[in-house]
Length: 107
Image (cartoon, rainbow, N blue to C red):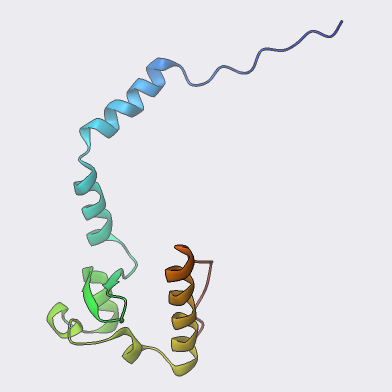
């Protein structure tokens, strides 16, 4: 008869409790706000028509615009014709499926 092994024990409750306590101490909105504002990558928010609504400071620094100036722009003005076609295709997919496949805009 073959002896059945017990599954490996999961994290101990004390370890889980420690992680849980850490998450409870951090306000999630503060955490996301900190990631957004301190990211090394530019993060843009736009409406479905491509009009910029907001972005983090890095996004403005990368493009050389102020937050006020960017709100007057549309992302289409920053893309080549080929890239714009790819982005429009991706947006259609997101609207249809709710998901985005991996993609890369090449320069």
